[in-house]
Image (cartoon, rainbow, N blue to C red; front, side, top):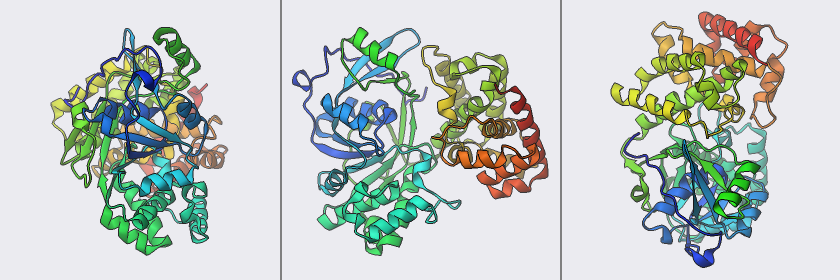
Amino acid sequence: MSTSSRAWRSVSVPHLSRTSGRAAAPVRHVHLGLGAFVRAHVAAYTEQAPDAAQWGIAAFTGRSTALAEQLTAQDCLYTLVVRGPRADSFSVVSSLSRAFAGTDGPAWLRYLAAPETAIVTLTVTEAGYRRDASGGLDLADPAVAADMQSWRQGGRSAGPAVLGTVPARLAAGFAARQAAGAGPVTLLSCDNLPGNSSAAARVTLDFAAAADPRVAEWIAGNVHVVDTLVDRITPATTKSDVALVRRNAGLADTSPVVTEPYTEWVLSDTFGTDRPDWPGAGALITSDVRPYEERKLWLLNGAHSLVAYAAPGRGHQTVTQAMADPVVLAWVREWWDEAGPYVSLPRPEIAAYCEALLERWGNTRMRHLLGQIAVGGLQKLPVRILPVLRGELALGRVPGGAIRILGAWVAYLRSGGVPDADPGAGELAAAIRSADPRAAARQALAALDPALADYPELLAAVSAASAEFSRSRP
């Protein structure tokens, strides 16, 4: 493990009640995308920070109301279950001070406009940025176009009550902050894409520039951007997890979070405002996040995509099951051999990281479903796989590990089992399902990057791999 990772200590508490614990801290941090990961990671780091009593979080869901209502009903407290190889530990996290539905526009604008707010964080997944092929905001996206129309009809003052996309919500919040004269704020994304906060700032600026250039000018001068690397495996919470907390911790908690012992958070040293003492909780602040991003995206997330698409054909449903299969393990090591040389870190450190991944994935008590990881390939594969693929193609090589991932992904698209929650994949799947393997591979590669469809050897290899995985899928 790196020096910026640690296992969280367990805190023994009898029940969920602020009357016997820390009072809700004053809100100075706003989060968009309230879900399991932010509660296992960002909120947990804030809970462990030496100055936690000064840094309450007001968290907003994407758009749903259920989780916000559940958390509000229990004073925004929840149980963090750290699932080790042999036992669980339980602690109560109290760093959330308020929880809101993402559609609560007045609350969003109120907190973004508050001078006390110094930090705005995001966990909205790669699809939430609504980017085009250049990385800017896709102004042709129907949801973005609808938000632009709503803004021009007064939606700016209603915020998320009528604005649905993340760039529009951020722009509306920053416009409210500008109008209130509340001063600078720091924007910090925790999504799995390189330069994540820079990407969030870019699409927000693009929206503001098209909607109101004065707001865009304010954002450019007052929103400080901190790129980050986050790492903590956090499966979706199940009913059995709720029952476990009730039985073993004595807590009636509707919204616990289960996670692994390992955690890592690396942040760029570009804050323009105060921040919690996250380094005191184990985070690393550095001048260059990029090598850590590469290591995580290509070695961990890239391998995750590989097993998510390729391992179900061998009868596996979870990461742990897949990694216990010698064939799948060999596939992963082949991918690591391809990707490792492109990571800007010393080779011994990369080798140690990969061995640590195998140890983490060997935790048989963590049930990380392959189906959960498979969702979002159109957004994930361009940052997890394509940088390595392009590097190999430039050297005149058609890399077998990358081919296997892409072929398995195409087979997944053609399987008829793509969930509705997979952004954009349904349309692509429908378009290629009845096509011949080569045509399907060409269209799928073009959806990731049109230039890839111009490599005959790549196209032939992905087509062959897709056909092989299609035969093996259940």
